[in-house]
Structure formats: C-alpha cells, structure tokens
Image (cartoon, rainbow, N blue to C red):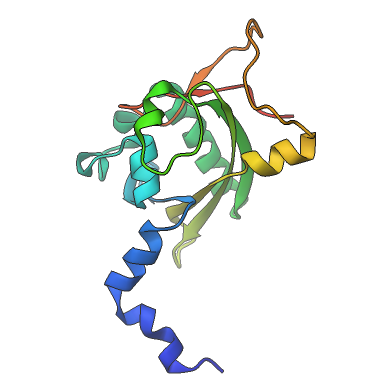
Length: 180
C-alpha cells in the first residue's frame, strides 16, 4: 500500500516541473488531433534547449516546427506506434553541430557522433483513439561506444554517408544513417 505522504508530488506541480526540467533525457508530450496531425504540448528544458523549441513552437503542427525530413521521420515513428498500439524504441545517431558548443552543460564537441535511443509511447482514450505520445529520448553514446570498444567518437572524413536534418530549426544538426 502506498503511503499518501509519498504522493506529495502529485499535489505540487512546481516540484513536478523542477524534476521534469532537470532530467537528462529529452521528454516530449505530443498531441494527436482527430485528423492525426501532431503538435508539441510540453517538452522539458533539455529538449527545448537542444531542439531550439520556443514558446511559439507549442501547439503548432509539427510540420511547421520541424525541418521536413525530421518531421517525416518522427511522423513515421508516431504512426508506427499508433498502429502497433504499444511503445516503440529505436536508435539514431547524429553529428553534433557547432552551434551546440554554446549549450550549457553539453559535453560533446562539434562534429562528434552521438547516439540516441528514443521510446515513443502512444496514449489512447476510452474509444481507442490515440490522443497523445510521450517520447523519451536518451543519450546512449557512452553505452554504444563501450559496446563497440571505441575510444574515439569522431566522424571519419570522406565516408560518403547521406545526412538527414535533426529536430532543430535554430540549431541544425545532422542524422547519420541509422545503426544496424
């Protein structure tokens, strides 16, 4: 049985947001309308900072907020989670853009390759319509490099890889090909 005093956070929205905004993971709450259009409702501070989201970004359709290729990737993942009616997890990698060097508490250097694991959880109402998504995006670079036994995390020149834009409007980054 849960002690009611342990549920204090449910009555303290300020405490909830303090915890929410101090998480290392990027957290996004996305609304789904009846026409299956997506818009951000809420994002924690690290997600806003890293993706360049402003107050004006919230409530707008994602296709107006994100670069086209990033939108298409996210839309396909959201639709996949809706179809499966369960959380999905996938990995991506990107090259850190020079503009991220100015972000507070960011540990990577420009042009480093970093790895992300995203879990998208669809939320359904009583009519089985998907109304929201909770997306949690975790930096898994250290884990991936340990698994690969790699000490250096630098892109090699002349790899010939095709890049896709990341989620940022103001801070362009680049996706690499998906890990296999």
